[in-house]
Amino acid sequence: MSRDAHVPKFAITGGPCGGKSTGIPFVAEKLSNAGYKPFIVDEAATLLIKSGMSPALFSNHDFQGHVIDLGLMLEDSMLRVARTTTHPRPVLLCDRGTMDAKAYTPKHTFAALLKERDLSIVHLRDRRYDAVFHLRSAAVGAEAFYTQANNVARREGLAEARAVDEATLNAWIGHPHLEIIENEYYGAQITFEQKLIALTKAIFRKLGIPEPLEIERKYLIDPASWDHLCTISERQEVEIDQFYVPPIAGYDETRFRKRTQHGESVYVETCKREVRPGVRVETEHFVTRQEYELALQFRLPGSKLLRKRRICFVHQSRYLEYDVFETGLHVLEVEIADEHERPQLPGWLKVIADITNDPHYSNRALAGAK
Image (cartoon, rainbow, N blue to C red; front, side, top):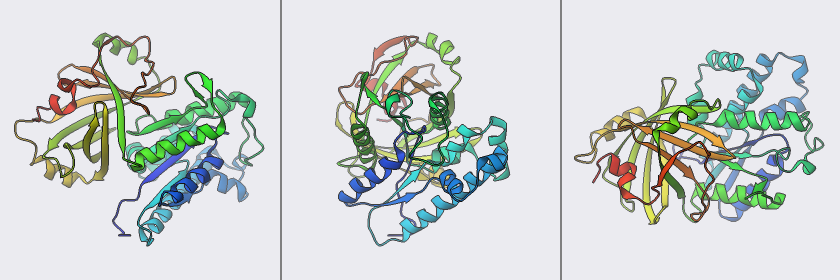
């Protein structure tokens, strides 16, 4: 494989006893059966603890600093391995990701750790991983199965496990592709095997097996909802600029997007093709700032640079993205697993209309791209 070729990289995270230890080998086997070569990046904190580094013997700053350093080194090393393999389809499965340290670290300490390493949240969270899958702790909805016996690094009781699960999920809010794998489905508890199958299907969708589908619902929202949205403590706001260029062969549209938070930006090229109303094939990859600015010169005639604020938050294990456009338009997007699903929205959201299949409200149309 080319050293410069993109290797899909997924962070599989979650609260204590969420199923990572079993889920990652399970997914790896299914990927192997589908013709992929999975490479697994072990959890840095567990490796350190197994090696004799007890968190009790170090300050939180020092211990989490070692976790971040080891995690980055392991991921970067395995990425180099994946890029030099002769196998045509390598995949990286990361047991947790660098942002997990935020869940175990006071806010000021985490900020100091990043500053010391010249790191930013945007690049750690948004750029390092193609997608993030949060496996809910058994302490949330499957309490009878919660145990500390299968991980020497696990010390949390039920209440603490729930708090850690929530803090871990909150650490990843803002990532463009965050998916929550629950212990329940429509209020009914599912088996652990069904949970692992749900994780596998979610990863397969991101890889494009059989195709990389994007299935979402969109809603036109009354701006009066904004005041309540601003009271949600665990939310992340990003600035988005995007524009459209002539589509590449085989796709209906090609879009370039800049996502900015805290003065740091990442740049992504996305290609889409509609399969049927509300369901699209979507492929994307990171580009450089120079490539983004070059593409801007080829913007579709008559179209404009579309700008919006995006607020990301979680409601009842659903990852929601609330967009406020420069024009004052308020739109909510919800990614779903099944096109027939009708997600339950927060009661405080004043929905004007379901605009999922309304072409007038597509981002492309709002940008004036013919």
